[in-house]
Image 1 (spheres, rainbow, N blue to C red):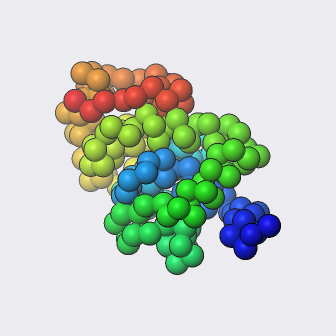
Image 2: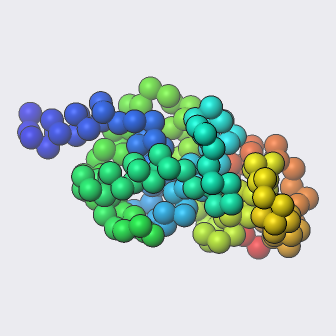
Length: 184
């Protein structure tokens, strides 16, 4: 066994749930923004694993400390390269991600999170926030932020339909099955 293979197997065994979520959100060969990684993970957690949200995200921007820590740790360890705003998987990171996709115990998490990431892959980062607020608006407790989110949802359009007119369950179903969602 090579040193790198041993290192991959060790890293795989030591992955935290947050580490796995970050790897699964990194579904492209090119760079992904920190913003996008957080939003994809946040959508998954709110819809399917609210128990993993912990003490609660900063609701205004759906920022999760555990996800930020995993991404920073991955950058330090050579799994990701980039800086605070954009990340890209290194070759080592791609191999580690492949191990997660192929062998992680929670197969539903792998499938659903990959489908969510694929569904929103064509939505620009900024409008992705509108989608998050449509799905998770009940978590927005700041009255100013809630009003801004509601206004955004009245003007935002997905697949030609105003976002406010798309019911949450229909949107959830599309995300879960990987149906591409187009902005505008």
